[in-house]
Image 1: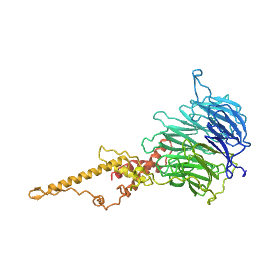
Image 2: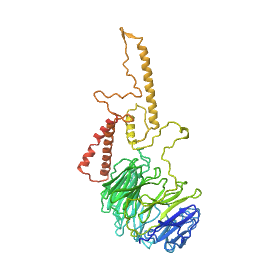
Image 3: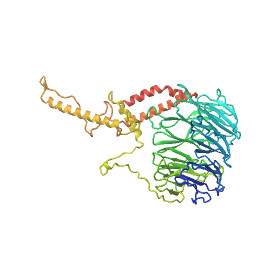
Image 4: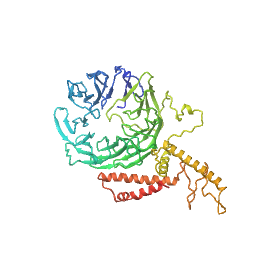
Length: 616
C-alpha cells in the first residue's frame, strides 16, 4: 500500500476539483470538475472509497477508484451531508420549514445508500446542531435523540425502534467508538441549584438509577464529549459562555474524565485561564491540552489525568496529532501569529518550527508525513490559497488564489487506519521551496498621525502577568469611591491612566501647598520662634522611594512593586487555585486524600495572607 497517494479536494467560488497529493500535485483528470458556484459542501467517506458533494441542485457521489459519478440524488435544498462510519449510507440535512399548507413540516433528514443513491428513510430534525444520528463503528446500531427520548435502531431496519429510553433533562449524547459492548454517554442539565452531569451507561443496560459512571459539574452552558479512539475513555470539556469574574473573553472551562471502567477525575491544569483545545492521541493512552492566559501552556496527560510532559509556554491554541500518533503539531492561529511546532511524541523532542500566518484550516495527510494549511473565505477574503508542508518544516507546494476568486475548503482523501505505517521521523528538513507570498511584518503598527515621531509601542508579553498583579496591588491602595476597571493582565488601561493623572495632580497640588506654606513661614512666628513646616518635600521624578522604618530599601519593578512580594502573591494564588479544584472534586463525590483535605483547611489562612500581601 506504500504506492497509495492521497488526493486533495478543493472547493471554492469556481467549483470543486481534485488534485493529486505529493509529489505531483496535478489535477486528477478522471474527475470531471463541477464548476457550479453554489457548491455548499463536500466530503470523503470514512474509508475513502466515495466522494460526495452538494452543488445547489443535487447530491453527487463519485467512486474514488475511477472518479466517475455513481449516483445523483435530487435535493436542491440540502445544506449538509454526512457518511455512516463504514460509508454504507449517506445522510443529508436541510432547513426545517413549515407552511400554511403543511403546518407540521416535512421530514428534512434523509438517509440513502451511498453506492446507489437509493432512498432508505427520512426523519424530522429541526435543529442544525448535532443533526446527524450516532452510529456504532460496525453500523449495527443507529441512535437518535428525540426531545428527551433516546431511540435505538438495529440497522438496516430503520422502521422499528429496538430500544428507547426517556432521560429527563438530557441535552445531548454520544456513542463510544467501539463495538459490542458499546457505551452511551448522556449530558444531563441540572435543575436550579443542582449540578449538571455526564452519565455513562453500557448498552442496552440503560438504568437511569444505576449509571456505570457519573461525573457532576456546575456552570455548564456547553459540553463537548471527546472519546479516545479505542472507546475506553472520554473527556468532557465543560464551558460557560461568559466568565462572571471577567477574567477571560472565552468564558470559563473545566475538563473532566470518565472511563468505561467507571473511573472519574477532574483534570487539574497547571495555569489559570481558558482551555483552548483538547485532543486525544490516536494511541488512546494520552491526550494533550492547551490552556491558560497567553502565553498558553501545552501539557500531555496520561489516562490517570497526570501530566507526563510539558511543552512549555507559547502563543498557541491548536492541537493536531498525525493519524499514526507519533507526531504532534502545535499551532497558534486566529488572533495569533501562525507559529507552528512539530514534536516527536515518543522522544518528546521538538522537530521543527515554521510560520503559517493567516491559517484558517489545517489537516494532516492520511500518510502522517505531510500536512496542509489554508487561508479560506469567508473567514479571510484576501490571500486565499493553500500550502502543503513536510513535518520537518519544509514547504513543498503552494497554490495561491487570485483576488477575484475565493477558496472555501480543502480536504484530504480519507483511508482505512491500517493503510499507512507511521512515518520514520528525521530531524533533518527535506528539500522544499521558497514561498512566493510575502510574510506579514512583525513590527508594531504605527498610526499615520504618529509616524515620524519618537513613540514607543509595547506589545503584550509574558511580563504582563506581573503587570496584572501590580494592578491588583494598586487597586487595593485606591481611595474610597475610586474603582479600577482594568482586567487581570492588562497594562496601561483607561483606569490606570486616569489614576496616574490623579496622582500627578495630587502631587502638584501638594507641592503648591508646600510652597505657599514656606512663604508664609518666613513672615510668621509663635512665641518668638520661627514656625517650621513639618511636611516632607515632594519626591522628584528620579527620587528613590523611602524604605519602611527599620527595613532595608527593597528593589522595585517598573510598576513600583517589590518583586519578592509579587513572587509570594503568585505562590499563594497558585495554592488557592489548587484548593478550589480540590473542593470541586470533593463536591463531585471524589474521595480525597488526607493531605488534600489538610490543604483545603488552609484556605482561610492563605486568603488572609493574600489580602495582607495586596496592601503592602
